[in-house]
Image 1 (cartoon, rainbow, N blue to C red):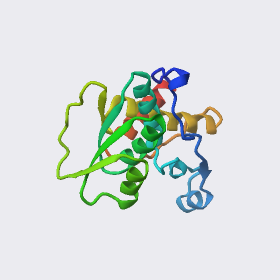
Image 2: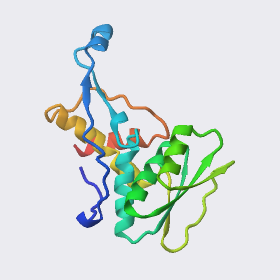
Image 3: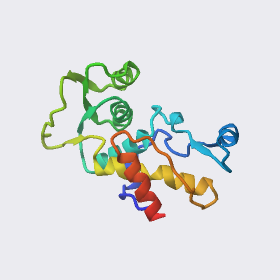
Length: 183
């Protein structure tokens, strides 16, 4: 797979990736299918596949001298960016909506993000040395391709007949398609 180049000295990691691919024999039998595998992304450092995206985005930002990141998040991206930004020494301003999952909010706060509750997400232009990131960011979506790459290698370099992914905002679906095309 093709990913943006990040110099080694700027690479930030919390141990993301290389998640387990479980075979589900019970559900195979129930559905009458030959093989069914489930990729477990809940074991990522902050509990979300977006840790892959935050690792790439924050590393890339660090390499380019970014000192502050702004995000608009419904939960997972903000928690993940908070963890990776904290490790990189980059400050994070997270804008969230009321009703956000408290676990994700607490993660953001624990990692030192500055959190503001807003009624709507209204893009703010960052100053010099600041970058704004959302789930639609190209770097965020590029890193999601690594999930399908891992599946490919975990299946001994073969592609599955079918892939089912949660839709969300659509980025994971697009990244899965792109990974399959590149593979």
